[in-house]
Image 1 (cartoon, rainbow, N blue to C red):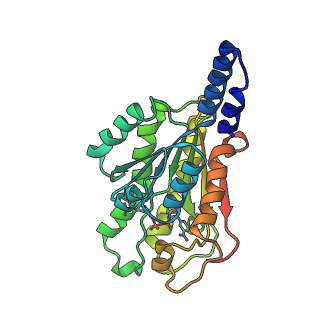
Image 2 (image 1 turned 90 degrees about the horizontal axis):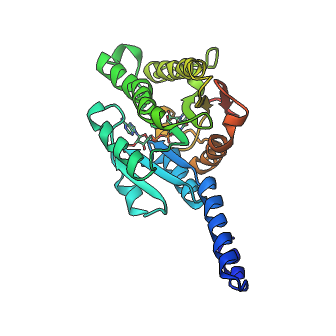
Image 3 (image 1 turned 45 degrees about the horizontal axis):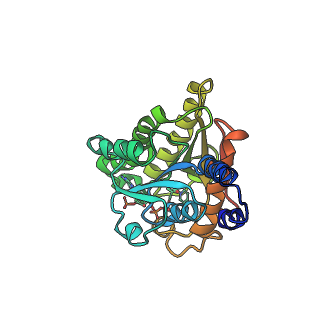
Length: 259
Ligand SMILES: NC(=O)c1ccc[n+]([C@@H]2O[C@H](COP(=O)([O-])OP(=O)(O)OC[C@H]3O[C@@H](n4cnc5c(N)ncnc54)[C@H](OP(=O)(O)O)[C@@H]3O)[C@@H](O)[C@H]2O)c1
């Protein structure tokens, strides 16, 4: 659309007016373009989010421990960072990118990275419990603390939780570490929304049902989810861009089946 406008501009003879219109179009584009951080963007839902925001012309920092596949796609406006959200010593990688790529402004943080363990409670070691909580809870704390100084009252933090973390939802054997960590994430989101309600950003959490990804296959081998990663990414992207106008501190259950 911008291109059409520019072509039509060539019909305008007055150079000053042409320049002014071009400048206006540039600022419209800048204010439309959101600065979005996606964690866990190497595969599954996070990867589809990165692709979608790139097509929509937003500026994205996409991170996970190994982004080689994502990098090979050379998506427009997407900066890939190899970063483990649980490792504080790697925080400078994100901080540098926020400064250099985003010019110190973050509009949206999608805490999507997640880790699942599927084993009976008795055989789940304390180390496994800790690594699941490290990613699903402390990793979210870490990423949120890094992004907060660059966010404002219009910004939006979207945490990706699970139906298993909802109190009273159907529970499944083998998912004690995973689902309890996702429950903690839900409560954390409510607390942060309260703590930042005067200044922003807004905090909301999406409790997802089954989505066809590697993680689902690990949790429920052979189960066919009704929703693809691409379809779920479309829902999350739209919510991340607009949800803060209508929600703060809310838990939305994005699920039509069990599991
Ligand atoms: N799929 C479902 O049915 C379902 C249902 C409910 C909720 N969810 C939630 O939706 C989110 C996305 O799930 P998914 O199904 O797309 O999972 P997935 O395909 O397994 O992808 C998980 C992503 O998280 C990244 N990740 C894991 N640990 C990380 C760490 N320490 N630091 C940085 N990145 C890390 C992984 O990349 P690297 O390995 O490269 O780090 C990967 O990109 C998760 O939070 C999950 O709990 C999924």
